[in-house]
Amino acid sequence: MSPVDTTPAPRLVELSAADLRTHLGEALAVYVEAMDYPKGTEIHRAPMWTEHATRPGWRGIVAYGPPRDGAEASAQPSAPLVGIAYGYRGAPHQWWHQQVREGMRRAGADPNSIESVLGDYFELTELHVSPRAQGHGTGSALLTALLADRPEARVLLSTPEVPHEDNRAWRLYRRLGFTDVVRHFRFSGDSRPFAVLGRELPLRPSTTESTGATR
Image 1: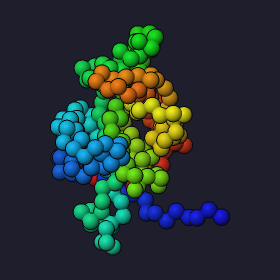
Image 2: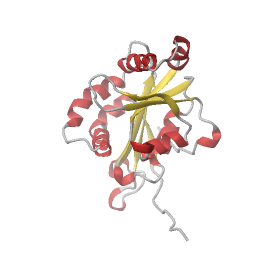
Image 3: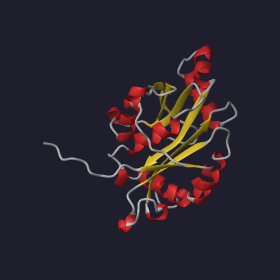
C-alpha cells in the first residue's frame, strides 16, 4: 500500500500589482531557489517583474505553505510563500512576442499560422515553486488559478529544453495539454535552447483542479 500524502494543500492568493511590490523579495527568493540561480540574480530581476505588473491584463497568484511554528492558517505572515505564477496579455510591441514571432518564421510557419497563434494570447511569464513544496500539486494549482476565466484565446509560455522532457515543469505542461509552438529556440542574449508551448483557453474541465484562490 502506498503511503498517504498528508501535506496540506497550498493556500492560493491573487495579487494586485501593489501586493507584488510588497512581497517581491519573497517571490524572487522562490524564483532563485526554484531555478537554482546564484544569489544576487533577484536584484537584476526585480525591476523587470515590477514593470511586468503594469502591463495590460497582468494577473498574479501566490501559494503559501503550512504556517510556521503551529501558527493559525489564517495568519498569512506566519506562512511561507512557496510559489508564484504571473502573466499578462501578449502584444506585438513586447520583446517576447517579437522573439517568438521570429522563431516561428525561422521554423517555417506561414504568416497565417503565426497570426493565429500570436493574435490573441496570455503570456505565462513566470511559474515557480520552491523545491520544498514541489510534488504536491502546487504548480498545477497555481497555473489553473492563473488561467481561470482568462478572455484570451490561448496561453503561451517558454521553458528550457531538457532531455526527454524529464522534469516537473514539462510533465505539468504536457498533462495540462500544452503542445509545441517552437522547439530548440534561442532567445537573443541567452545561449540555452527553449521550447515555446501553447494551448487553447479555457482549460477543459477534465484538466482543471479546484484552486481555492482568494483575494
